[in-house]
View 1 (spheres, rainbow, N blue to C red):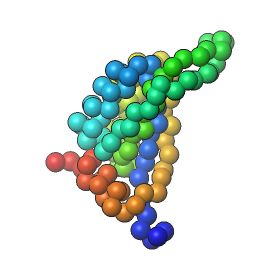
View 2 (cartoon, rainbow, N blue to C red):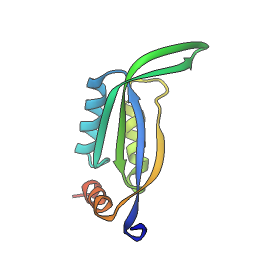
View 3 (cartoon, one colour):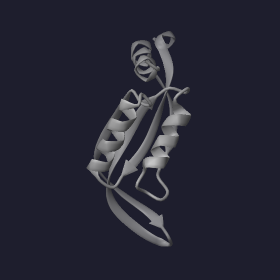
View 4 (spheres, rainbow, N blue to C red):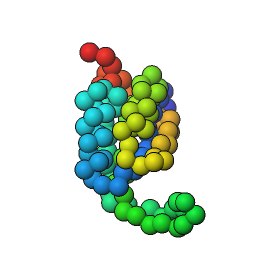
Length: 110
């Protein structure tokens, strides 16, 4: 089974509204920067911001892309994000060869 795995990248981020998350997802997939963006939520986040402990409901996005498309995808997320300091967490993951092939094909230039 291990020989059938291939490396792809997930970028994890959150948005303050479902509409913002869906707009981001649509834009990334349309521009071929992500093969898929999954939206969860709402999730309850507790964090420190500007010296205060805050709590907010957010929508979490997991963006599937490749190492090659990672810089452009991160730039698009940061540029279009509504948060001053967006969460942008990058995780390399192992996926089935077929799924990884689909991700690569989905983000390849036409």
